[in-house]
Image: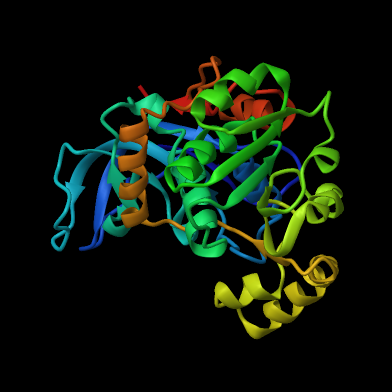
Length: 334
């Protein structure tokens, strides 16, 4: 089968299409024929080795973290799925590989494709959906009536996170570009700030939570608007010791991440806020809950209009890294 692989970490986008063996499944796995794979900034981090301290892959390895597809074969102890089922998944971190014609996936990491989505739009849900769900329910432990602000939330993360947050009963505030305002408001945002016209740090105060999508340069401003006892969760600013402990990383990595994250932890403590970092995990049970929300709220992710095949994977990656996608970038396998 064809797969998009890298042989070494590199700052260059130079992924190779190779022929490899179709994977053999274990008793708890299913073999999925990939229909559509989504392309995310996480792929760039995997290529450059930026997250190798969290997950270092034996090379060569196949890229790709989320997909939609059809089950071709089931293991002997698979009970909830059968051949022919249409599914989607955020692949387990230790065993990614969505940029391939077939992938073996543990049954605990997959969910049924939402009825209101097709293979293309469905590919835009698992990674961002699980990120938002795990952030809100596990790390922030948000309760109905509390407030969450998502700066830079007009992109692919916000279009899924906003309706999930509203479904959980939160007051949702987003900042972003003017062109996305109507779409994000329709998704459920209670307040939308056009970043070119309003500085959120001059408008907002005493929010319960901030989910940072912009990185370290915004941390001071984000901390300033969080109420005492609140929480700041970043998708990209970097891990800290708490993250390393939660991930059960070796003690030496816990020490390293403690040093790396010390500045962020110190800043947060000065505001009586706690800092958190997330690296989303595969979880089929949570994916089913997300499916219920997607169907009930009729969430349909925006998909970038560019069409890519597996042979055009480098062009797709470059669009994600350097372009301005108008939604989730995807690779189609048919």
